[in-house]
Image (cartoon, rainbow, N blue to C red; front, side, top):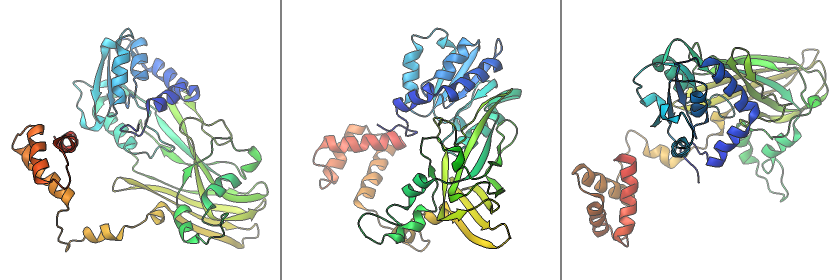
Length: 387
């Protein structure tokens, strides 16, 4: 069953098992903690970093997690010595005040790329509000790279069935939407000969020193070996400070995070001496990250070969009906479900018990609730959301 972060307990277990990811975090935490250190573990999940912080000598640990997985951590705490020094806090770290500032903040909040949900906001807030001057942030920064790739399997997962399919159907109308999305790459390491040039630095996310709402970089490659250009592999390497880190480069075994593949709209034969120039950017737009990869390929003699301008914004399907309902001049009327929510919230505001509210709803909306028990299930859901 999905949890708050769409992680299952099995997913948390996979993160713990990934020694190439977990090992560097553990070593960085071991080095950072001194006798008497106070630690904040953001996104503690099932609690591994919090437990280890206690083993390494932390005086107090604040472990924060919005997901119900924190309940598993608290159950485990009963059998792990030193866990009495952990304060478990259910919620978002940006909404929680601590009674003191901490010496160490640790938080592995990544997705495939660092621009993931509230990752940047959470770590930035922790540095500003919760970390003592001179304290340690883990990770210190993420360093992002990209490389042009011959990746037929990756590209086929994008193009099929929109460009070609087994049924002889013209589904090309869907192609612009899929070619303007990046996706998690296959787990198998890329063959070195399929990386058509050397990786280039896209930029850094400096958690320990600054805020970064987005990232933009102009990357340029001289193609080094002949092949078919299908797109770009994009990934981050983690720098945990003091020379500790890990690499998720595409030619290495995959880390638990995975890596990204940004397809080109059309495949292109390339030869040594061709140039690929890409403007690669990501921006936070009203809470969502919008990526753009604008590419130009030229031959060794300077002649133009191809240009592409792709963006996840172009992949957005617009619900015209919803857009109409959001217009300033639109006059809405409550649907049946809206009337139920309205009635239930009014009753909650009066301080009535859920059972009494359910009985009232079952009587007022018999077309929706065949029994009081069905009404109670809906009222309980509304109570969890708004109560």
